[in-house]
Image (cartoon, helix red, strand yellow):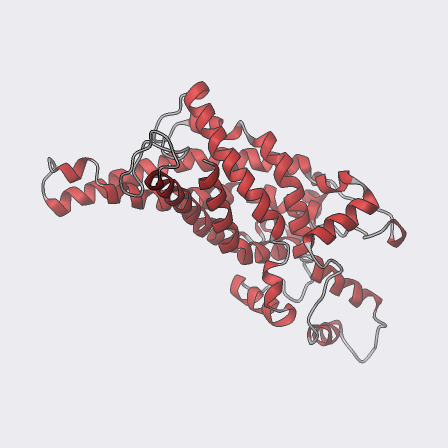
Length: 352
């Protein structure tokens, strides 16, 4: 479980982080920003041109660590509660959602500091540029757009050099509690997402398996063929397909909460007490601001890269998990495990 969860966390984080950066920028940018109307690919291209290629992985350290831990915890927790308390069945069973949600309070303890540091790092360059724009002397012959373009000619450099530097700086100035900014809204979002995620995964997996088995029967033209009852390829393909669709569905349903979370955790935090008084807005204030300034659609700012990332990451994450478990079975690292083909059932938290 630990090896599978670790592999899933590493692969998923590295693949999806550039799209996560675009999502965060869309969620936190001002409605008057020059990049407000840019599409996902256009904004990513703009970031690469103005900030350099290293910027797309700025702040990747905390997610690499925390998501590996959370993946291991979530898979193990889901399997435990599903088998011993809620007795969830394959297919569309609400008990699978309840089983997934049980670990949310623990997930929140791990992911709130990670999300806070990641969000602060992802908006760091933008916040520095905003400060420069505010401090620059107004010129009646020079518009804001011209000044912004002049600043973009130089690669943006934020005030934090790494996630560790960000954490050390903010904790030394504001105490350890600063890392848990937005903890409540983040934990609520975790519970809603993880419940939807596992509920949809089991449902989609069952539907895709039926569909692929039906295709297998048509190919062999024999419903009683041994391959038609338990075709290994149907299980292997149903895992990434179900994982991708479950991730996309979970993000689509919980995205407004994530948008509020990003607004709470992406607020400018003074790097020292002397640079300004710390005034943080709560989740309800951020929600009110988003509705007033951007309307209801503002709660879905950045939803396109988020769903694309969720499908890619979740599909690869489930496949990476199953692949790692298969290698463990083949190498004898697991006890009492089968050594069958990749994707076979009877193991792990996904296919119990």
